[in-house]
Image (cartoon, rainbow, N blue to C red; front, side):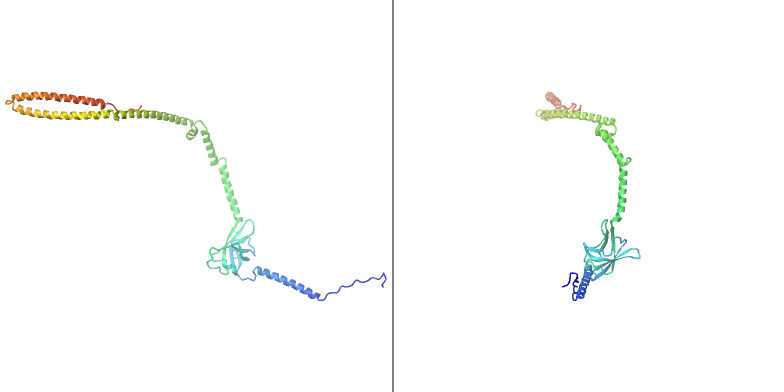
Length: 337
């Protein structure tokens, strides 16, 4: 046995066999995994995919970066590979478009570069008719740029012009202020005794004259209304007197019938007178031979004359009666009050 003063050495661990081989295999696997990851990344980014080249020409390429997507309907169909400045001072944006996505681009396609106030720029493609001819490889197309920041100065200038116009409109010497003052004056006149009429005429004296004229016109209209009422009553009485039962028209009709009968009688008497006169003329021709006949004819002529005079007197009385019943000679004009 060893004494207490003896020290024992720790045992040395053995190195496992094939350690170098195992370490080499581990490093190789890590390298293969890294290569596979790189390969997959390149494959996922389309490095090994067949592409066609598209060149977009813009006046300004601000906001465009290498690796930016070209989108169609919200889906990426291409990637910016290179940005260069051409000899004419315009920016050339070279885009790689995979062959499988090139079917969405046609010769009539439109490309836009949108730069918003917040966020990155975006390149978009728009195709109106997918039946057009496909876009060829290496095609050069212009880009329509829409930059919100470029519109800000113009918006500020427009806003400043609007504010200047508003300040001129609302100033104390502006047309709006004068119009408001005139409107206030008109409303004050409308609040006066003459109301709207005074505001329209401008002076209260003119409004008083107009009101007095209106009062006179109202009085005249009232008097005309009363006169019209009296005239209507007079016309009604005249109609009743003239055309009513037993009125002047009825009595005139009866008198006309009587006059017609009397005239027929007078006509008969006159015919008899003509016959007697003819006999008297014949009797006067043979006066020497028929003296007795002449005396008898003269007697008959005197009696006939008396009958004619009586008929004429009756006719005159009838005419006077008609004149009394139908006032031909009276003044029938209606005078308004």
